[in-house]
Image (cartoon, rainbow, N blue to C red; front, side):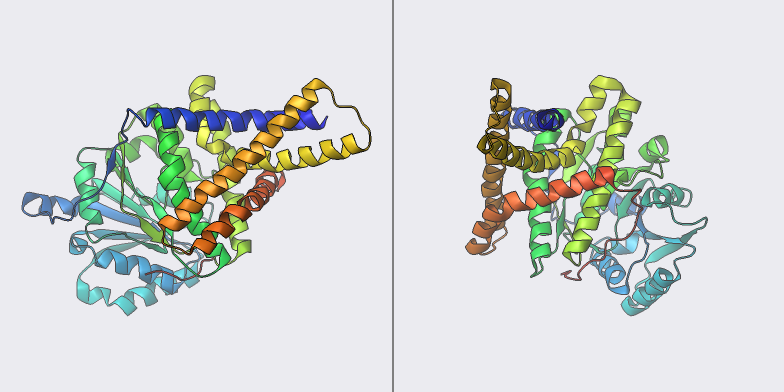
Length: 412
């Protein structure tokens, strides 16, 4: 009985691992469309073309510091005076409306002649996808950049690079890295995002054909958005859902290697809530993948959405090992099949430990202390067990609504 419940999760984890292996093999001979950006300022005709970029910032339950940090990073852009900002507010969210007013006054926007427009959406809050859908009615620019609040743009030439790349590609996305704080949650969030964008995402991209675009910092041509929008408002991970639509519309996608920095969750509770929302959204995307694309393409599209099930399989591996040992001690016989499953569970847990050791290199690459790298590699299996519990919780929990993750303010 225990093995029957465990085997499906183990199988899905194997499919996910096989995808990473295929990506690693392809990485030897293939190169992804990744741009390093340019430090040179664009002039002449291109400078006029920069006016075709609109920046959409959906806001919901945001504080003045997060809004100000995002707008300030935009003002540091070399082409900042050529942009038009669109702030999308919810009608009933009066606190965020006041926070936006305070942030713009604090930065002296009126004196900087930055063009902006406030879009107020009525009808009650449903999801971030609803805000994105609604914004397209007001945004007329050819190229559109979507930013979360609490995001800080990585370089002073990032927007110039985005416009340059959108002349060739349909979608441009940037890695999002959590700001470096001092707490445990900050460290986990930083390593988690850095490891995903630097190691896991490229392999999935190579093996399946498309990446998962981070919804907090990506740009697209308006012509493409008119094809793929509206997004379903009940999906909690609208950025992951767009990956499914990529298989239908076949856009060209490029990653601009210029990290956008985001403040991490304020506490371990906020971190857990964020994971619950992500995991429930991934489960929704698995269903939509097969519904929209059919069995073959649906499986290919849903590979990255298996992440929470892989985490759940790690927890179930530990439980299965403990139960098997307990039954053996009590004298219960173990047949050949059960021994094979037990071996697979031990192998899975060993792979988890190896992954933690590999993750310690990410810690060192961020110039953190060696002691922290050692602690991370030792604690990683426990972290994955906790993630597995959250993944199972996202399966069983009642409806998880869209809400803002409360964040620590550690922006640069």
